[in-house]
Image (tube, rainbow, N blue to C red; front, top):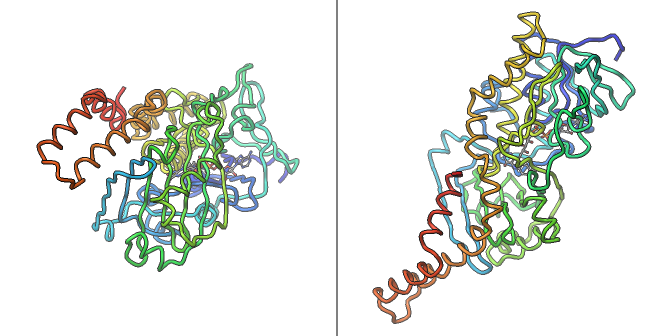
Length: 437
Ligand SMILES: Cc1cc2nc3c(=O)[nH]c(=O)nc-3n(C[C@H](O)[C@H](O)[C@H](O)COP(=O)(O)OP(=O)(O)OC[C@H]3O[C@@H](n4cnc5c(N)ncnc54)[C@H](O)[C@@H]3O)c2cc1C
């Protein structure tokens, strides 16, 4: 790469955000370089992961059907756990067979395919290339320096580096003496772990009550995270299970627990252990998830740069959405650059159209709605510890056939709920489910 080479856009990071941005711009004929530090895209990437095909389809059209996805999700299960019971909300929607909206996915397979689509559209995809600095001249980002010793120049640099806590380009680049993103607090970031566990596909289908080729999700709250705000999951892939979960860094710090403690605790739960029997761990991964809400979003459009996906703190942990916010923000950033190119104007003002597009989209609507969801859970630990136990006791009484009349049971349950603050419990739960302020 020669020094004088100048692209319309350089994209840092070939995750969902970066590949979406690069593909969008390349399709419009722009000169785009997509730089990825991994040996190949996806090599270092972690996700639960459930991918939402709507957003993929918006970007690649009908070709989304060729993507290496694992199983369409037909059933979603939510379990509220206590140490020896769980209360389930299971939703099996058979219409998902004809119109699936989400699939389990393994990023090591998906990311290379997605980046390849950008390459086919004309983007220059360069793996094994760490961007080690943003080049700032006269208060404007004008390109990137790479670990290979090359400098690459562009009208716009799109930063899709993922969360990049501490080591990232955003936190370590200053314009006018100020970093492009402030340091994140431990209560704005979740530490997540994941194991990929190999299991015969037929056993997966029998054990998880799935038809051949179909999949389900199980997400577990309460005792599963030892009462910390977060959740654990099992997702069915073709011949593996994705097992993992996470909680806020601040809560790991407070409780001195490690992600490994969390994982072992979950895997040993009497309701989880039989689901994992005989499954062999083939990969262990850890990653951070941005959970700072709307207030945590940094400046996403500045002089010479745009920021997308996790780097921009765009994620909705309550609905386990992140990859879709990444893809859609990447697409919107790409469309902004296309417009700048058409206008021959890459000024900060014109690049600011990206923020306007985000503000007008479902992304910011959701970010605002869930702005306080994580602090709500963090500051109301009863939601994930005391209330599940109360609900467990009430249901135990309800279902137990033991010579007590149903009238007496009803009275007992009502007394129990009143003692524990029935109305407070209902209100807290309502607020958390609807993420009300
Ligand atoms: C355990 C876990 C489970 C999750 N489950 C789900 C789920 O089920 N559904 C969902 O939608 N989301 C889920 N997410 C969130 C989702 O993974 C992220 O929101 C999404 O990956 C963000 O995409 P991105 O492109 O912004 O960042 P990333 O996916 O992090 O990609 C960033 C890319 O940039 C590269 N990079 C970083 N720095 C540099 C550099 N300096 N130079 C060159 N390349 C660089 C990285 O190698 C990487 O390829 C989960 C996350 C975790 C950790």
